[in-house]
Length: 396
Image 1 (cartoon, rainbow, N blue to C red):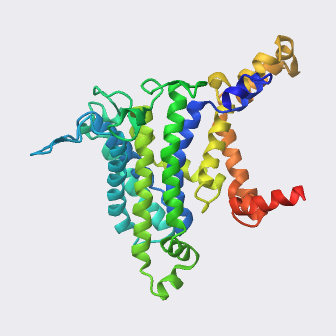
Image 2 (tube, rainbow, N blue to C red):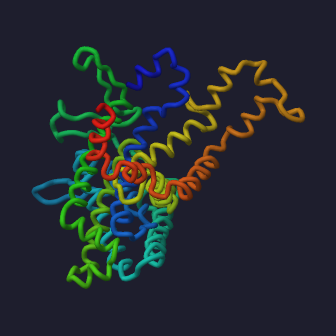
């Protein structure tokens, strides 16, 4: 679809407006992280400002295993956790490692509630951030992050040890597809998009299943009235801790996908508290307590950032205006010696974060339920159930 649009008669407009495939891959794995944030924060009401700790843990596990930092030799079994470890197994191990960290943090943090819970999780995350920045074990310059240095090709998603059912991900190390079904050709980034998207979809369905189980019902009861849930006999501490561990697991998987695609991680893009801040932003824009809403929220966030980016990266509003307005228009003076070209440079070049901030403020003020939450309110229920009835009504 993307190829059709960017090769259509409106090619310049679609190139400027649509996010690149590289951006969409980023949206996918970070959206999984934002969904895991929403799983605990949106369904129990406990804001986890330290969620980056689990994302970073998952990412570091992947790179450390690939660099043979975690390899152990076991009699009979041989060497485990070496560079040859299947990436699908690494996804699970990264999730388990993050879940263990979540268990340790949650067992202490859930003795508090409200803003105190948010602050203590943030504190734990920052402790891990500072620790990793100075931990020489991970690399020679831990404060600058680590990259995959071992003889590892692209991390493979699919059925382990079955080459025909796996594909490698990554912009430089990923697989490409030529002539699938006779007419489909995919670049390494496009293959990564579908492979990462499959993992994200499976994780989303698992979380969705949990939310619609009796366990999820208790999570909602805790969010609505924890005292009442406790009064009717539920051990709310155990349920909150369980939800936190599950959330940490999927955050770790998201971090592993991030490291698998980027092949590197730094303390700033793994453990820093602003990583959790981006998940909060995606959840507010997409809709708290909707699970899939953060995906749309982060897509909008990244789309706006790229559309208003400094360099444009092949698209964006600024390159589009420069290429299509013409020299005469750009040289036109609009106020006190300021030309139109200088004006668009002043207001657009490098100010994407400013406009995203304004967008965030507008959402908080006027769309408090987020994109998906507002849509559900308008339709009177979940989109999948209510939309078909509305569509049938239009055609009657």
